[in-house]
Image (cartoon, rainbow, N blue to C red):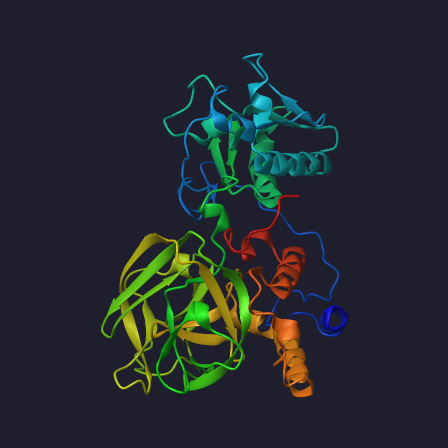
Length: 425
């Protein structure tokens, strides 16, 4: 059985590679996956600009403040010194504090140091502020946790600072701010924070509609289940449940709560998950031919989502009444259907997350659906489980593969910052 699983995965990866080389991931203008990646033109940040365009200590950026770290605190062991010779540390306190930081911050800083030397030969990255143990920053500053650094170039040429900020964004810092004419401020998520582990899922308490009637908790889905979904034209249909793209039993997650009143519905989903939104100018009362898939973190009150109408025969655009945040410990689940869509708590959602292009994501899973269908036909007793493995906890191996490919071929701002938990490198 293990040999069969390994062979199946090798064949599937080979099939993906063949598709990428022959056609590329093309959906309108833009480069394809199979094409050679050209150097990207980098645009310097403007003075006082920050990326992403949200407050630093919010879910979409570096996340909440978790408390000051002192040399005597238990959390001091979370900090690690950075002795990279390609980085100059000002260390005006002469205590080595500026060299102390979390591992995530260290990884991003080291990556930035390489970019700086490539951008300006002979110039190094300079850190003016790192971990602060003396209270020199504002209350709840991430400097107190070793999650923030203030940086310049070694030549202190201020004309370079806008580009330095852009390089910091490309290096993977979770929030970059052209804060002062004298430095750039960068910060990262906490190693173990809820914000760093959001993913793209629904809570285990969410429900789906079954073809044989009734509802079922999303966490209890299994091969053979057919759940209510919708096609590209908004027509309701039942689609095969294939697998979980992510499954974390009993985990704590922070969910966006999307609520409507007419029809009344309430959906919880993580920040990076896609939700279909109707265009404001479209007055059609049913179907989704002009809908747009947005990250849940971008949905705002007044926008319209698609909700199952009374009688369960059509989808109706319903205005979002409120958007809030709620933490739950019922686990997190990302079900995949053959259609790529699913109705959760009577609200139409995409099965995909991380990238804000539902059609691209559905195309990328075509090899997976094809091979699983072939295995289901050849081995009816397994139902294609050799590929899907829906009972396995964690992120699905195919999702991880696509994420790595996407990280290589797409711009860093094309992927949601909370899209997937990956080990620091």
